[in-house]
Image 1 (cartoon, one colour):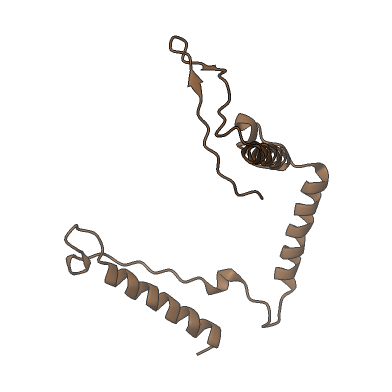
Image 2: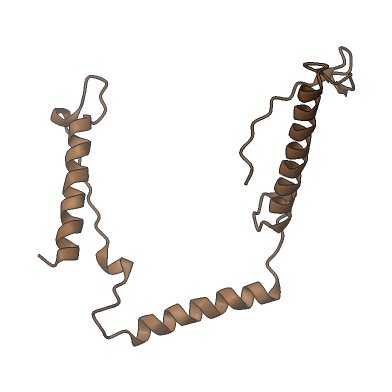
Length: 146
């Protein structure tokens, strides 16, 4: 992954509002500066190639303006086999070692009464922090078995 930020300015035609070509900017005519610009150009080309490869290999639905790359038959079989393994493990689990997330879910609902509201009519941050503390407490109690 290349972490470089570049600012790009585009010249637009006054009438068509379409991009037009213009001469490239050069900050200096000195040899070190020109060498630095060519290094930046190489980095930019590598970054462009990396982005293109990432988009090509991505399974994102939004890739290519809504045309996502469908999973291959091999990938679908792999996902299906993983799913079957999970189901088999769930059905055959009788030990206490393996615990499922659904068995450790905590839900809490409460009404925000005027005493809990700040001047803007929203829940006061102290009450939010208290609920976060309570959730952390219940989580610790569940994992320690207390």
